[in-house]
Length: 251
Image (tube, rainbow, N blue to C red; front, side):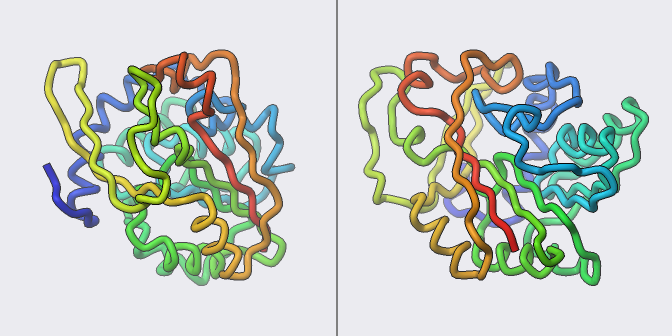
């Protein structure tokens, strides 16, 4: 169990979790961007616009499902992830789907090295809660965006994380934002601990707005079912608080 978070233990966690995670979302047919548990997809939300010929950077790409779906629609995609096992899965998926995506194994802290590359769209799905230095990442994201470029990201809803899924009672204070340790039991019976950051919505909005990016939308979608991400989410809680929140910013 980690007592602090750093890039080394983030990589260790995702390297160990990669196989299980890829099996969990194996229902993703890689034909649309799925923004998170019980969230609407890009086909419905239309946050990215016409992506044909657009240069797209995906942060925390995992097995590359989102980047691959965008490449099928003409996007020129680069996906980065800290986990070597996730990148291996991404390359395997891209080969299977017969698309070209530039997958790179690098942490969030070094995306500035992608310069002088510029991107029309920066996308992140359920990964920024693992970012240690969000302020630096947002600065680097802005520097990598073209003028009028867009930044769309989803995270687990901070409100959802406060509720005990068993008795539906509040278990944490919303104001106790910061590093959280979570325990997961995997199908093989083993127990695993991982860390992530739970940040207040206002802190996220203020940090990004102060960088100079302009907030365009906040979306708290809730779909009736989820055949891809829905495993492990109790419906009684999902019906009360959407597990996913999505932000769209423009440069």
